[in-house]
Image (tube, rainbow, N blue to C red; front, side):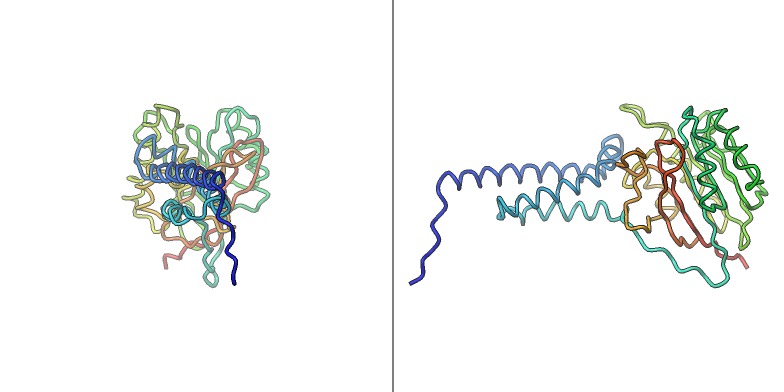
Length: 317
């Protein structure tokens, strides 16, 4: 004769029911937070920045439910699946295989943090990676001079305007400033003549986002999308500080025009703050280019990690 295990005591049942209610409530709140990442405006901006950590919170809730309230695991599948859909466009990817005979071109980009005094160190350390093109943002007068001095010997071709600058081992036959709908210049476009083909390189330093003040940033992000939409260059790279997390709805316009560069190092490529990266606000986008690898590195005294993107530019022949 089999003996059934004793039924849970009323107090234990109440504790489990209470745990189930709490975990289910947290799951619903996290589901709402994830869905908010699709909402344009300040709500979407905040929710997109927190999206990776919403997934971590969901994982913790699921583990607790496994031990305390298994009956709600099925319910928790809903926010987990929705989170998966939301994070998918920002997930890591694989690098392409370089074409035979193609010359890899390494492009690095970093916000060097104005008035930090670290521009020279950033420039020197980024040059040491072997980069072919270096893009720096949030440059003030002193940091621009420091970067120029540090890079002059190895990067004879350069162009800077406003708070952005680009240095190249290869010739720059064309350069122009961009305002992107604002009254000051925080972006540029240059043509770089690489061994395989010309590439249009955009460098962007988007306006900052503060509570109640993100219209300037959104204007710039719309402006850069409009600029690349009419750009007839066969190969385009856009790098810089976008002040927008990977899943931010404000990046939707440029995502529809260019390919977002996925990190190939297995991470989400979080870039800010450098001491403990919580979100990715520094990006690279491409068109007509094969991305071989993409990662991040620490350089100088900046509060941003640098993005490192190695590409193969398709020959126009």
